[in-house]
Amino acid sequence: MELSSKYVGTLLQDHRALITWRETMNCVAATRPVLAHIDHYLGESDFLREILLTLIHYSEDIVLSRPVRPGDSRTIKGMVAAILPHTAGTQIIIRFDAGNHRGVIVFTEHIGGLLRGVRCSDVGRGGNILPRVATSETEKASLWQTVIPVDRLRSFVDDGCTNIVFPIHTSKQIACAAGLPDIILQGTATLAFPLRDIINTETQGDTGRLDTLTCRFSGMVSPGTDRDRRTTCREASAEGPHRALFRSPERCKKQGNQQGVYLSEKSMSEMA
Image 1 (cartoon, helix red, strand yellow):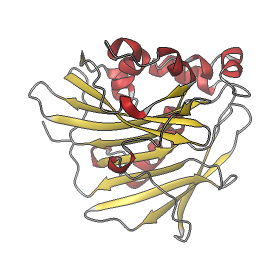
Image 2 (cartoon, helix red, strand yellow; image 1 turned 120 degrees about the vertical axis):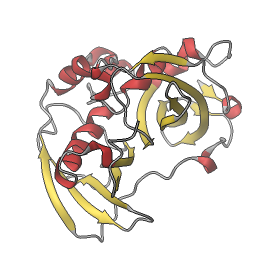
Image 3 (cartoon, rainbow, N blue to C red; image 1 turned 180 degrees about the vertical axis):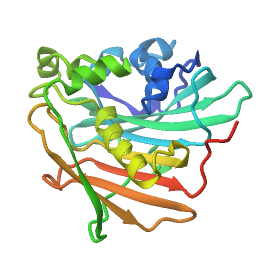
Image 4 (cartoon, helix red, strand yellow; image 1 turned 135 degrees about the vertical axis):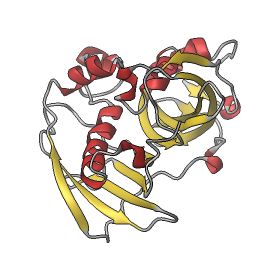
């Protein structure tokens, strides 16, 4: 199969919904209904739906402008922002802008997926306007470390608690059919657990200071085989009143997931 970058700029149908308590507990749950039924939101586009069956979560970039609160109404607008060739297939990035009932932007998300085995038929488009993904600054001294256990049931628990359901995380048969050796932990889980540690350690639990988070999922986590994933937190220079914190597994520097978190000096928790 192959995919052309001609689909860059394709608009998705708007998604309107009320934010629930469950959705406030996961950083990308608000846009998950669109991704889970992306063929519907593509509307009349001739985008090949079967290609999406090869999709694996590859990257995240979320800029938070206002707190996400349960009971708030949200209108989420989506667009195919980039389609780029990748050594393992094709990378596709979708941009979501979530606004409140007054039309004010609450967050902007660039979510990247890797289409394994799908060849990009051209040089790609849209890569020049994407946010920069975090990179580990290994020369910086370690601030602190944590160990995150990943037992065999972790992906099943995350599937049920977040309501983010994708069978490559819970069915070995489907995971193998997608070209994977076994089930893998959800990208949102590998992002959320270190993020929890950063918030608790650096802001004493004040999620209102979270400004931006970025992550590239360059290494897969197989539940039950990566029980002791040691991660390192380092500080990097950043412009403005932000602090950048990067984490990467000590056990696998080459393939480890790179994560950057930018924390504001002021909390936005009091914003309407």
